[in-house]
Length: 311
Image (cartoon, rainbow, N blue to C red; front, side, top):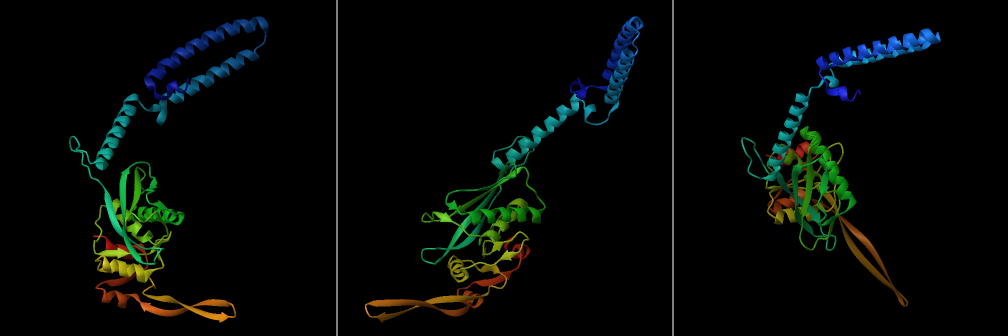
């Protein structure tokens, strides 16, 4: 009964109250005559209390200003507004020609990511594309090539930081991360692309452009700081060879230690024993990069990186 009264107009409820009151009065008269014969007044009191409770509930339902007083026209209008908003959102991402004055835009941003080939320790430059589509706030990673768990974690942190920086929860948007690598790459991993992932996500959420002359390496931490990575000399050389004019690296990594292995061997009778030691040298990445026609800047957090990479 109460569920049916949820969208009933107060004028209709007042009419229902009158009907209920008249019916309860009739029931009470019958019970009074029955009580006179049985001389048991308790049942009559119970009936009167129940009648009063029913009338009180109906009266409150009639004049309550909350959701129970919502008219059918308001429900219809709300549904129409939701449908119109959904249609506009779909058009904004589909690239289809909209009708009327609805605008649309395909949101997709690409940023370079630097990596080191685990087979030969050489630097590589690949691309990461971030695309926004209508959805439910999901974070999606393309599985070709396959990704390791540390990269998946880094991607989720990057999305979280980007949402905080832009003050955009993207609850009605799914974010898709796609790594475009060479055919030889089967699996990618590591968190060194976290900073670049965050930059690309911010650019997509805010509609900004990414500077095509800047590359970046560095992890992204939950507090928005840029974490240190390995393989900076190899990544810097690959970025310079690819034509980038500026490389952003984590704070404190302009000078890195380079470990060069040295193999020693000695014969003991029938056996030869091999021993490996490392020659440690320091490399100033900034000086090296200048010889390749590229500058190097240290960044402490994602806000520092935004100054150089977003326009």
